[in-house]
Length: 90
Image 1 (cartoon, rainbow, N blue to C red):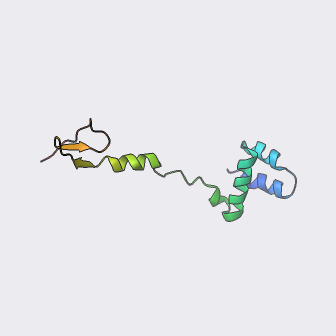
Image 2: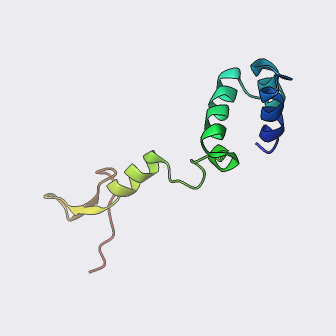
Image 3: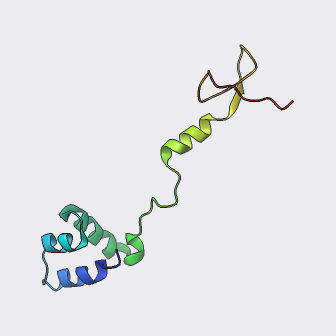
């Protein structure tokens, strides 16, 4: 999104329309409009993808399920699947 500032400036000065700006950035018109709103709210920093560096929701759920619990049948089993067994250290 390094080029966004220059393209957006041309858009504001009516040198480019939404379609041309989106084409120059390689995105859809709707995405350009979303970027424009985010840029107006917080500048270039707001354009940064907030998902980068975050753990996916699915992975957070799996990590939570991986804790071992005592089952009534045979010792320790993992919460992911009953076919998996946890190793007991004591």
